[in-house]
Length: 141
Image 1 (cartoon, rainbow, N blue to C red):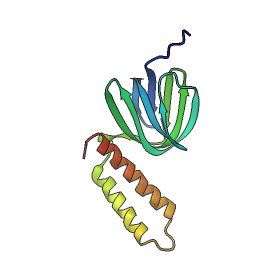
Image 2: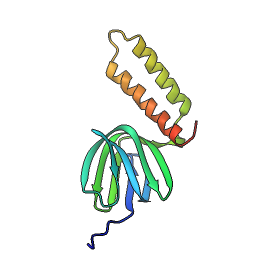
Image 3: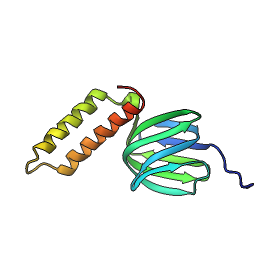
Image 4: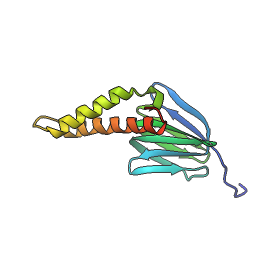
């Protein structure tokens, strides 16, 4: 290698049911288990678990945002593979349903009683919050 880093990398984002994206990008950001990871061309090899959060990638001057609900990330010399448990684009998110889920979770959390699984309710709230964040970032409300 001549010491010059590449300016693009190949990104593939897949779920068990669909291929969401496959192409060259300038950079990728994913919700790693310990926080967000920014990946640029020439990044060192890496394998990480993903958590609920926003996947974003920049292709030329356009930024794209997706909802991610866990999975795995593999970074190789010139390729990034996102194997998401569940991921959706902003236009696949039902905004009203996400708002309802968030409101229902908030009501349950306000009136928490015995027998309610706090972690599950909190997870549902967080998932809805991230879905709404993806929609907001893509200016679709």
